[in-house]
Length: 143
Image 1: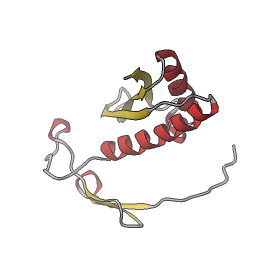
Image 2: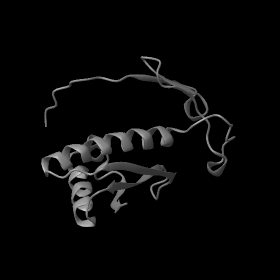
Image 3: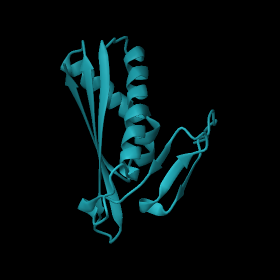
């Protein structure tokens, strides 16, 4: 599948999981630390690659939900994505991720909310990139 690149993002990380990462535009600039739960120092005021991934996936999936809602002529009054990324050892001796995405929508029926979330999972670039590699669970809630 050919992709017509419309935009390119770049970031550099130094020091691995206990280092620093920064985007080329300088907007994202964060110190990293392995959490204590994963055997690291868990330094205050730092984040993890999984937090960065969760933030990016939540934003991207939210955009996909907006596109699908429009295509289905549905108009949620509010739409929020709660992304949870898990990290840990896998059965092959390496490490892996799990993802749970919850779309929380206002002004829709449960059926319409789930329809949007399921269809968004098919078009979201992060969902496409993880498909077959990461266990991703999708659910919808209405408020």
